Image 1: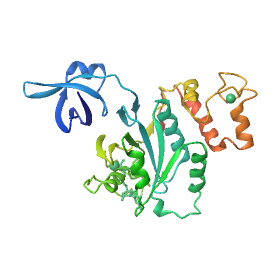
Image 2 (image 1 turned 45 degrees about the vertical axis):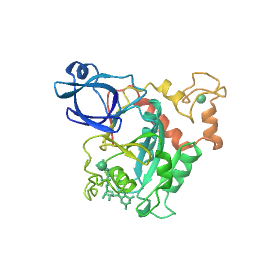
Image 3 (image 1 turned 90 degrees about the horizontal axis):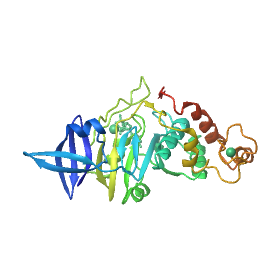
Image 4 (image 1 turned 60 degrees about the horizontal axis):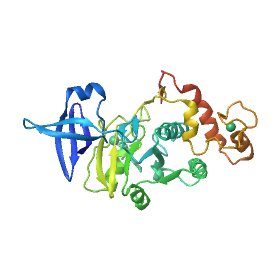
Length: 285
Ligand SMILES: Nc1nc2c(ncn2[C@@H]2O[C@H](COP(=O)(O)OP(=O)(O)OP(=O)(O)O)[C@@H](O)[C@H]2O)c(=O)[nH]1
Ligand SMILES: [Mg+2]
Ligand SMILES: [Zn+2]
């Protein structure tokens, strides 16, 4: 038994009891269900080659970045360079929560803005909606981040250039993961990290991942999505027990938006994502 901690093309690194093994996946396995980082696997030595024989049932799974069996996903978003996007934060919250993974918002590059920046209002909004937000910048102390990582398996999710690899390098001085300045011309990162890998950090496991440039809502059923969102879940307060909080009369969420107990910004982001659910077309960042 072991855990896949790294995949580069068809070379797998399996971690088991303090040791890492270089392994391949049996052909039948790759056809059934491609192994992903985070998978718990059975593997054995066959003719001097470690072979992954079986993937155990996944506790949960995220598709972009591809990873399984995580406790939480950190949505890494920079305050600037690339610009902060509440739409992207919410869309990631939707995808992550849908897959039964706890989202945590991490805002990087806080050293590049001042207290009056409007980002601080977004931060308040997410906190009020019940999400954990960790702000960090060069020179900041990482205690809160470390406490959040302890004893957990965490994946970093965010577009290219937001500072995912930089976070790992700052968390543990032994790392020297490649990082790269964002492109002045494009205003975004250049996909410096090319593969997903789990590292032992701060008493837990943390996965660095490649940045993505589109998101896929094709697997999302919007009715199920509501059940997974802590601030939009249907309870007795909506008239209909299958209320989607869109056009239904006597809806508690819409009432909440009117009286300020539900964030209007987050509600708008929810309404905008509903038409994308179950659709083949990806959302390009
Ligand atoms: N000022 C400042 N710069 C940062 C911070 N975090 C990262 N950077 C810079 O942002 C740039 C991109 O950082 P990376 O760590 O390579 O970003 P990434 O998210 O790993 O990008 P990909 O691997 O392409 O997905 C680098 O030049 C970093 O030095 C921060 O908190 N403050
Ligand atoms: Mg990186
Ligand atoms: Zn409702």
